[in-house]
Length: 161
Ligand code: FES
Image (cartoon, rainbow, N blue to C red; front, side, top):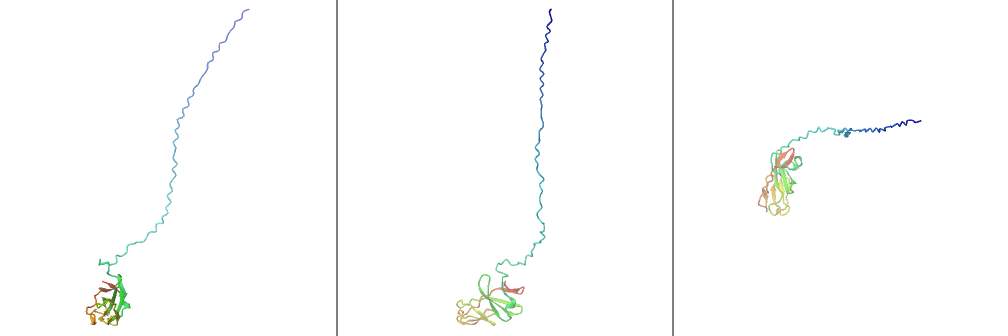
C-alpha cells in the first residue's frame, strides 16, 4: 500500500519586523533662570538738600577774613596782642566803637615784640612806645611806625581784610 507522503512543506517565513523608533524629542534645556529678585535695599531717605550758601567769598585773597579776636575781647580805646593765621605777632585795637586797627607787633627798632598797654604799645627791649591806633612812634629809640595789618569787623569778630 503505498501511502502518500505528503510532505508538508512548511515555509518558514521569518517575519522580520523592523521597527525603527525615531525618537526625535529634542529636549530643550530650559535654563531655569530663576526670577532674579532684586531686593531693594535702599531706604531712599536722601532728603538732605546740601546746597550750602556760598558764604560771601568776595575776595580771592587767601589771608582775608581770618579771625584774629572777638570784638568783645578788645575794649574800646585799647589794643590786644593776637597771632595771625600765618603765625605773625600782631596787635589789634579799637580807636572807637565802630573802628578797628591792626599792626605788626614787631618793634621797628630791633625786632622785639611790643605789648599793648592802654592806648599804647610798648617795647620791653629799649622802651620804644607806639600809638596803639596809628602805629606811630611816640617814643624812641624806634623811628619807624609799626607796619599796618589790614583788619575789619565782621560778625562781631576782628578779621583780616
Ligand atoms: Fe623795641 Fe629796641 S627793639 S625799642
